[in-house]
Amino acid sequence: MTTLATDAANAPDSGLAGWTVDLMDKLGLFGAALAVSLDNFFPPIPSEIILPLAGFAASQGTFSLTGALIATTVGSVFGASVLYWLGAIFGRDRAAWIFDKTPLLKVSDLERTEAWFAKHGGKAVFFGRMVPIFRSLISIPAGVERMSFTLFFVLTTLGSLIWNSIFVIAGYRLGENWDSVEPYASLFQKLVIALVLAVIGVFAFIRIREQLRARGTA
Image (cartoon, rainbow, N blue to C red):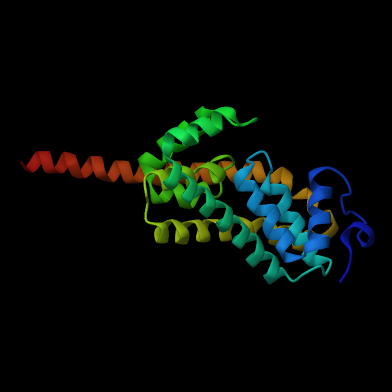
């Protein structure tokens, strides 16, 4: 097994990226899963940095690409599931209290996520895995509202697998140029949001047209 911190020319050795590399060096696939799962509990930790690093580690032989994809997805689903059950067990009021007391988090973040979930349900869980902040928070209202855990698990797994695969594979393909992935993350996230809004718009248009036709024939 190679050691990223010493063998790769562009391996980061400081900050969040350096910590992630060290974690993967020491713990392998478990370290990759752990780093990604923390993104759920601490939204300021950007998966757009961690995921390409997992791909970079795979390209250097620390573990396989398939292993990186599975480990990062398991980490995402595990973290999301913990938040789901915390929401289900403690309820909305205690969740809001925790957000109010936690540095870098705001109750308004939770409120926006709750509103999105109330409007879009399963779609919010699936697409939320691809949107910053919402990716971490969407699990809480899903748990509070006692959404079917099986459905939550499936949607979270699919959304996480798609999102993780894009960045892990990009990091794997770019190798030592893994850090060139991050500037494109913002653009991709905006495209996801635009797609969600487009789907919602089409759905609303169809429903409104059906209601107008129903009134016209009444």
